[in-house]
Image 1 (cartoon, helix red, strand yellow):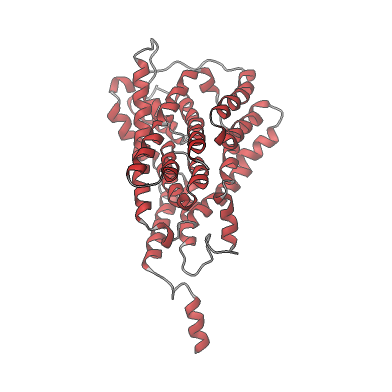
Image 2: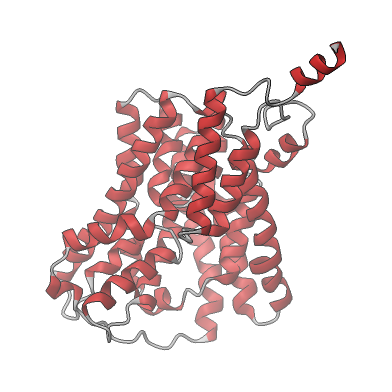
Length: 371
């Protein structure tokens, strides 16, 4: 009987508490949204399952020395996974529309205002400068960049920051359409844009080389993210490294996404995650994402004042770096009003510019606030 009692005391049943139950419910909601609603399933399903796994009482989680999960979490804690994700993103991204219409990079830059607005908001709510910098990057709607910057500036906040960033990325189809419709008129939503000009192979090859020089000189703190992004794109566009590009955009990014999702989810142990700071981060994340969407839209309306050939201001909403979901949302909203209006390729330009912009913003914050 003593042995049976001792065994029972080692089980999760004997150690189950309400806070673990709450987090397991959160994990189940993530899995449900990923499967039933298809909101970023490649992210939400691994993260949701990781939340469930990390909150099973009695398990050896990411905060226990010697546990296998802590070894998997190593890639999050030390910023290993985000650059590998950026390598895969670069290898699957076509920058042609941005090259063809370079002024659209301004929309991606304008959307990053949400990052700095959230930085100030986090300072107001009592976070330190380094914590506020890590929280602010959520406004870029870029999960890997959020993880990278928080691992450098505020490692103790990686869990809530990553969960907030990926949650709002998954909810792009829910959050952005009301903001788009609120800030644009029907006449603006009906604007057609000309087909982008043809971009030569030479331009596509030169873009990542020139891009890495310009962006890393501005934000050397993000050189690993920007370098891997442009390196992946060079593998794609060079035409002679297709095997490497194919591995980066398929096998490698899939493996890293699985490990990243499970590790991030498992880091949300109830005793660490269920704090007032986590709720503040979620609130600031929602604020930053809305601000980023709005500033992209409003800046598009502003530059239209000076353009003879107007752009559809809705594409400004895709300046956040939730690729390609934000561009797809803009396209679908445009289709609601005119089935012949194809905005996807135009929206991809500020969308990929947002990826670059959020990484540059992270590098600037790291350069200013890093040790």
